[in-house]
Length: 143
Image 1 (tube, rainbow, N blue to C red):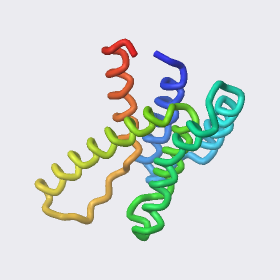
Image 2 (tube, helix red, strand yellow; image 1 turned 30 degrees about the horizontal axis):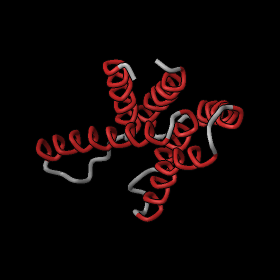
Image 3 (cartoon, rainbow, N blue to C red; image 1 turned 135 degrees about the horizontal axis):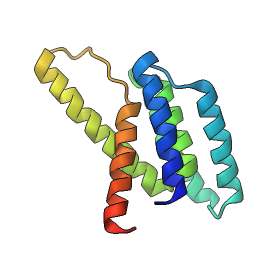
């Protein structure tokens, strides 16, 4: 497994725990991973176009949070953007897609169980699960 995926997984795991407990991301933890990821992106073999594309899902979530009046928290967008510093654009898209899929399944189960649409779910644990699923898929296919 590539170290970038492991670093992204550790970052999402740490912030998932904080998101579950306090409904926020860990500021110092996030800044440390942001700075390290920025250093890797700048000094690595990554093209500026790929780096910009990998940051787009995070920017999209930040925009969705602004347009929805806070239904999507800014921490989710920030976490996706930091993840984009480690993973290629396709990897971030895969993690994001799987995270949204997993959270939609959980939201559907909650809706059927409680019949209320006002419950809020922390999203970062689903992004972490998406990252794990993507890593498992890569390990199984050998890519």
